[in-house]
Length: 239
Image (cartoon, rainbow, N blue to C red; front, side, top):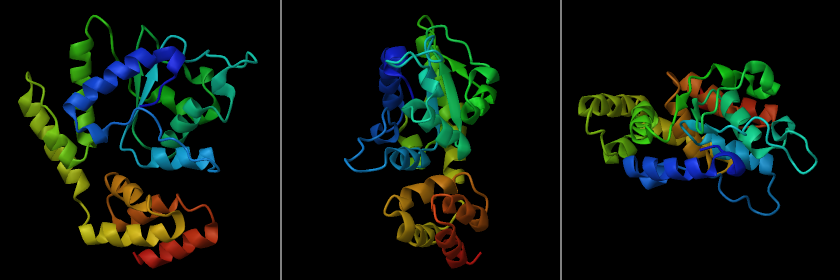
C-alpha cells in the first residue's frame, strides 16, 4: 500500500485492517520495510516493490499538491518515496490500483511527472465513508486473482458472492503454478548470485505475470544492474 501520511493515513490504516481480515496477515504490506543504515534507499525501495503482486496507490484530496518545507510539490522531487514506489511499480508493469478516498479525483496526465503519467490510465476504485464496507468488498474481489494460493485459500470469501470468490481463487492458483517448482528454484538460485536472497521472492512474483521461461528470465534479469552480469544470467537460463 502506497500512501502519504498527511493525506490518507487514516484511510490507509482502516483499509489495511480490512484487507488483513480477508487475506493472510503476511500478504498485505502497508509500509516499505525499514531501510538499514548504509543502504541505498532507491535500491531498497525498488527491490521491495519488485516483490509485490499488486500495489494500491491511496489518493486523497491533498495527494497531488502536498508540499515540502521549501514549498515545493513533493511529487516533483525524484527522491520522493511515494513517487519512487509508484514509478518502480509502473516501470515493472506491476498492477497499480489507484484507491480514491475523501472525494479525491484521478489526477490528469499533465498533473503528473513523466514517470507517473501512466497512473492516469489505471482503473481506479473509490472508497467512500458511507459505502465503505461494500466498496472494500468490491476491491477485495478485484484483488483475489493477484494473491498467492495460500492467501486466497485463507481469505474470507464475500458472503454475498461465494461463487465469484471461488473463481478468483482458482484463477490465482493457475497463474501461480504455470512453472514447475524446480524451474522457479533454479532461476532463483542463478539470480541470487547477482542480487542476493531476495531473488526467490522476485522470481515467484514475476512468474505470475510471465507465460514462458524465456519471458520469466528476461523479466527478472531487469533486477541486475550491470549489463555483462545480466548477459551471463540470461545465458545461464538456457531458454
